[in-house]
Amino acid sequence: MVVTPLRDQTNDDVAVVEQVIERARRAQQGFENGATQQRYDSAAFAAAWALMEPARNAELAEMAVETTGLGNVADKITKNHRKTLGLLRDIRHARTCGIVSERAELGLTEIARPIGVIAAVVPSTNPVATPTNNVINALKCGNAVILSPSPKGVAVCEKLLGYMHAEFDKVGVDRDLVQMVPVPSSKIKTQALMERADLLVVTGSQDNVRRAYSSGTPAIGVGAGNVSVIVDETADLADAAAKITASKSFDNATSCSSENALMVVEAVFDDFMRELHKAGGRHLQAEEGKRLKETLFQDGKLNRHLLAKDIDQVIGLAGIAVEEPETAKFLLVDGQGIGPDFPESGEKLSLVATLYRAGDFAEAKQIGGRLLTHLGAGHSIGLHTGDDARAVELGHGLPTCRVIVNQAHCFATGGSFDNGLPFSLSMGCGSWGGNSIDDNLNHRHFMNTTKIVRTIPANEPALADLFDDHWRIAGK
Image 1 (cartoon, rainbow, N blue to C red):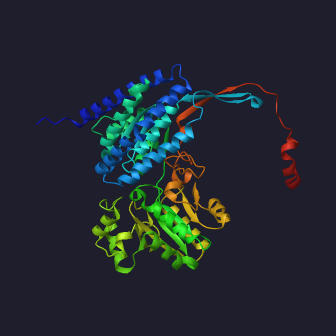
Image 2: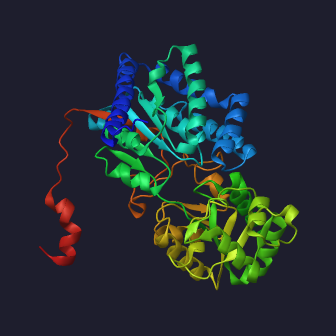
């Protein structure tokens, strides 16, 4: 057997990626040359229909679960459809080509310009919806995009790409506008892509996000999820229980926006737990809770055999007894503390949430703040309440970019048809999460703008106009 030297293999991997990037650059330049909004829109909607056609959506959802072992087919079909539908609603009338703004009073004209070649690193948890979202946004703004799927997501990404190319052929779009890192995938290829693209969009592991930010290429990375949700004494308890259960159990908790901890105030704790039981939540105590924790966390790490698995598999693998298992949808264990020594306080990517009992809203807020500081800073926190002022208080006081009020968290955080956030599968976490953005990733992050700057009547204030208030207090 002939063993290829590591250096030669590295050079080969880099060369392959460079060839893909060169094809993408040529395709992007042709796409941009003489472009119209209709051209960009046609390409974006062709990519969207590749997934939204119902038979293909079902096939890709089934393939995603089969190859990654994460989530469930019915919910992935729903996610693929709703996330893409919502994105198309958001971008349908958006101007991303040519002049997009005229501000005569300021003498400014803004022209939308493509960034070039976008590299999109996508996770195994959402191997279909996330790359489709990235591709649509990239094409809408005149870019080419190269996908770098996780190893488990390679096969389904190839299938998705094939459907996109078939749709491109129908409307005259160059297939090289959307490519993926050639198989087999490797860290060398991904790193080469990161270093040579014009913009990186990274969703998934924090290791990939850190590599993106250190690559030397402009990057948009998103922070870790570790969502906690407060239920206070003014909440509609039945509504809160139903929404929390629907969110936590959706796609077997693959979403970074799935609830990982509940903080329930003492005054309604027992009543809420009864409502949560009706909805499908099962609170494990004493030995059963201890056994689930021991199974879920092994050597301080999450047990991959429980990640995003169906509830019956979680119960079976943990070897626990659950009350009324036939109607159980997710499990709760008591939180013993917060921090590295208490793994239950972190993100679990499974149908398991941690329960904290708070004396009052102030203590619930304090627990939520500690959880964010431990893991998930900047991402989001949920609140079920009848007092909107408390949501504003959380927004002022906690290191979070989103306070989700009286909603099913994983449906709301990435945009919903009944809230004002843009549809996205990637949530920026601001400086708290070490990210360059603090909003939901959307089409505006996929374009540059050129400003035409003209003279206007001078607007120069006198010193007294600016310092009058200061001088009254401090003197000159």
